[in-house]
Length: 145
Image (cartoon, helix red, strand yellow):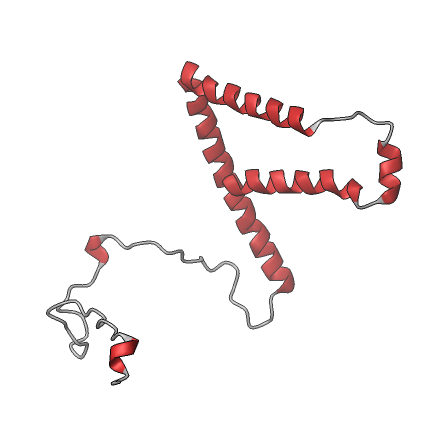
């Protein structure tokens, strides 16, 4: 979710800064509304403090807001999956994996699904203690001089 907030911020910042690169834009914006950077930051800071105070005064508003953002995050994740599958079908090579195959993420398996140590391969070495890297020698004393 924070990715979307950050992406929106940076995209907005790019849109605000683009007119500085185009000389014809400065002529058009010359007669537009003016803004002071200091006043803008002050207003943004006060707006942030006001929004933060809402959570203290009315925690149910923040709770519903958090639930809404979580739901939007799930929808955004599903939208990203759909977009990935669409782009994969359009641009994937012919030997690519079928897009209907589930993508495995880095999850931990529950303890009951982990094979026991007896079922493990007997050829694997077992350690009675955890191997730890040896201490490095001091370069000055190791040179032998």
